[in-house]
Length: 264
Image (tube, rainbow, N blue to C red):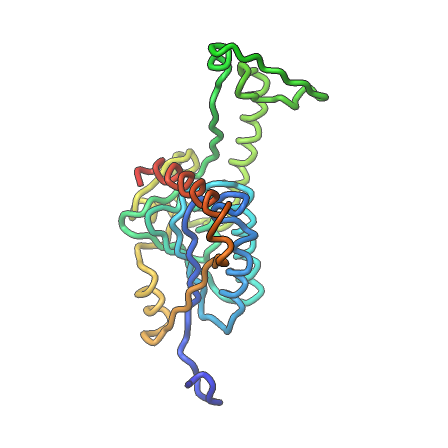
């Protein structure tokens, strides 16, 4: 009741947003559309002392990573509320992109951070369809429309074009990290090669500011009476059934594959 009594100061509170899973499109994981209302509430419901991001994310879509991080920065500036990131198992690739939206980043002694790189993976199935006597028929208007068709042999010019796209995305990623971490970053040639660092080694490289956990760190900064309000994505009863069940199953498989890259 204290917060409703005039002239009595309420205890500070920290809004906590959990960013768990791979960053995807189509509503199967973390994406900007799904997180927009959650982040809006976290920053603008009441006057939080800070917004804390609980991050356990192996990466994913670079576009969605950029959109989510930009939204976090925009809301932080609009509300003048600082942002702190707390990494659990992993904040790698797109997960680290999200972490860099915070003013300060903290990790556990066993957390994985980094993987500042870009990857594209697929399969070549041209021999498989030939083995079963299947003929591939593709008709295009435009010489690049069937680029990197998995049922045809790779063309060197297509691979070169893809590599150029990946290099462009990598430079954008590097630029974002440098803009957020600045002089904190170590002068290490391996920093932007996709290398991953554990715990204090990530701190030494300037990828994080220290080893700390959310509740004790926030209470250290804002007082022992600091309260915590959690915000997350909610599903309606209709989203829990039907096609959503299949969608969630696919998302779970994708999540496991993404985390497995880091032995998790």
